[in-house]
Image (cartoon, rainbow, N blue to C red; front, side, top):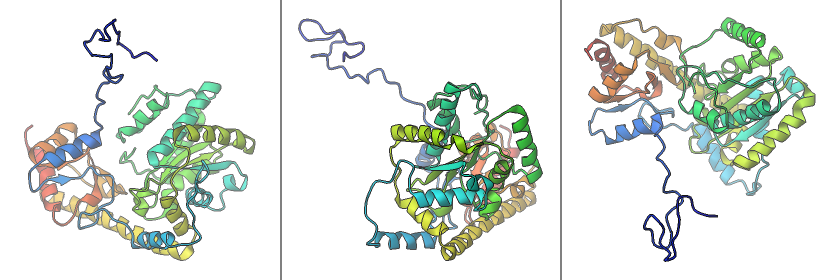
Length: 398
């Protein structure tokens, strides 16, 4: 294979003056643009101010500002590591069977008609983004072989800036709007309207459950839109992550759920998924998935874990309420009721780009450019400072 842009003369020196023609094939590689998350984290680490606050992280943080692992999860990890019946071996390309079963059931419910009719399959993935990528690849295949769906892909706004990149990497370029969160906490009636619109316009829904149970503290309530779509006979892809709700940030535990209209399609779509998986990662890791499966399949463990999750959600809701009240007492312009009307780890403040830039440059408080912040990163030590900073961002002439 000849190297691009490297022509060697008789003396073994190429035209670029490189003896022996050893110019790297990577010489013309351009530096990729940094993601928003990396850029913010780098700026935060370089910031020397003692009162700096980072509100753009993805993890759940405790009151002490540390990433949190439920006690039960740590205990099960120890039990599994000491289990003499577990032997190291490669899982199938689809992952651990029990994990897939439990992940499917928490999304659809054990008595789901789609499960009973055997027109559902799941794939364990190395993280949430991998689940989205696999779904994008399946949609691209559908676009290549059928006129039933050929894009475009509509993404919510604001959303995680990695989503558009994932679809583009899968070869889907028609993306009108470039994660989650949107700040929209839709009612059941609103979801029903969306489902009707999707059916009428022949759209394909790709639903995301990046932190199931951390919105309302209830697995079933958080999964209601997925279950409703399935009950209406709508074909759905759903990407799930269990990293947030189990504190398994280093384990990358994801799952792609595919709900089909007919059982007769199952084998062909599964075979395409298997082919794609083998070209992307071959097999997922099993450690974190085994922890999740152990918890979800044991009623006593499940009750204990749900208690931990409920305490996390209650703390996040308390932070939202206290922040809203603090902003009101400071006389901050605007209505801040939306802080408590939303749920989950992430909150859309409504601050614009200039105000977000003021916070990072002048107050050393780092939010996502969309104005979204991680609620759990607010604690008793920084809440007053954050509230005052938001007030200044709205009242200071920029």
